[in-house]
Length: 144
Image (cartoon, rainbow, N blue to C red; front, side, top):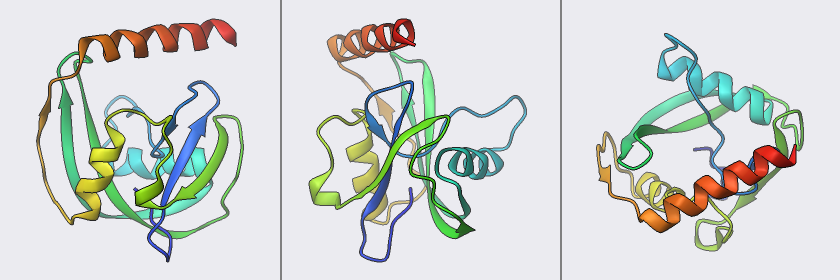
């Protein structure tokens, strides 16, 4: 998670998924999380970052995955407002996050802003929301 000097959160809207999200993505095979975070942030934003701390690793039962959220600091680079993966980048106040956002992100952002570290929650997701997300992803894939 990237914050600017006024405490706003940087969010990305990817070209392959219509919801706002934190910059990030999937680790490559045998890639350390700390390396993957820096690579994904650079790919999606053009920014070089260093990791401050791990907020937590969130385990999503229905998705059968885990998401690690890190707080990072910008060390350089040039912000790219759009690119091959990124449709749009914008900073949002934590109290004015967009409605069309990945479901778990507001809680993860709140945890980070509350200064939490090393959380390991297990998320029991709503089945209907999960199915709707899968349908939306399928529609998006067929669109491109």
